[in-house]
Length: 193
Image (spheres, one colour):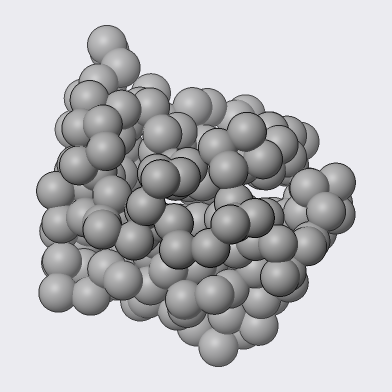
């Protein structure tokens, strides 16, 4: 059964669910940039995410990380798919992501929705917009729900920070944004809804 992960949901309690479980990060730079803070998520974390990755890279990343049935996979995807130079249609993102999630060997999959961007900080005209990213957030949500994967709404988690959740490039998260996101993810991973 799919569930939305929200660290501040009432009724969640820490039960140490991940003791001895490997957490595998897949997807784009929203997770690839998490390096020194990996221990905040758990004792055994493998980061196979890569900057610039699209939905088409997930299977290769999972194979490189040797995803096992007892793993928890956390993935972030959609922001690069929406880039004008990639032009991966949102409908195709949904289809490929759903296929990936249904075939993933991991016991549990958590999908982090694209957090959006600060449009005024992006370098080029014609870059991603929040309106466009909403289509990708919807596609990722639909794929995760159809595959009964868990969903974490990063945009909601980061909303209290406003623009300070993002780095100066308007695309990547700031240190403060990562602190909030990783704290929410850790709480959600170690909680039972």
